[in-house]
Image 1: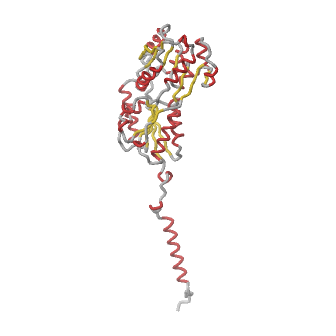
Image 2: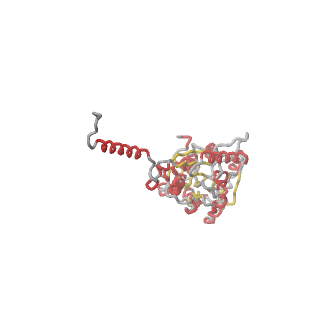
Image 3: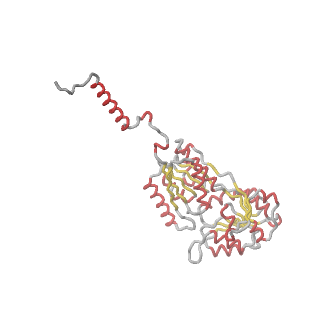
Length: 360
């Protein structure tokens, strides 16, 4: 008999040890049970969000929309890509179509979970190609009626309309300059498609001011025509509503930056002016009740959060419009125009600018 005999219970001990080891190995290497799998965002991996901006960055208008979007979305596990269409100052149809194709190529190659499109060019040249597709789209900064892009019948698109504070701005203008000097208002436009909706909306809203004459509407293509128009309006218009500032060309056919254009106005025009966007105020526009890019982005981000995290369908989320405005008065412009300061109450309820941007 072999001298290495097993003691009683040894075999049972070895078998038990082996079984425990096998169970431990299996537990460490098996896949999670589907019944208890984590379905939270972290287990699903990061959401891929593609932001297609009609214009470019850095620019406060587009940057604020995107900053607001990320704040409103309020999700941490997100991977962003940004595509700049860079259409500001461009009106060549072929260039615009090419900008749209490049943006669509980005969608096809990156395959985002959601596309966030800002301003009108991104809608016309990108979002309209994906109506009723499986990719959800959320927009902001849209001036046109949603039906112009087919959004009203699409089940995968929703967002935030940019509705300007036209009545509030004109009311602020009336408080800012002497009433005896305000009768005729000239409206200056370019051929940016975003302003088509603005023009339509403005013509409806100005009916609330029957005492004012809005008989002068000018659509201009070149910087030289713009300068000539402004000079010719002295003695004919008591105020200028400057809407279009992005599509003007110089003598060589190159785009003129809006900051250069507005500086020229501040240095050469003695006609009080107003507009509807905050980024123009520090470049000489007398007054505005500004639409908020940040607010639009925040609301769009909250909509995207409902789609991604709460699994709501875009068709069940109504299109919203901007509501908050910011009153802004440029005191430096008031001084240059030689008009009295507005009442203290008007100034106290407004953001006040004391220097032009180029004087900072």
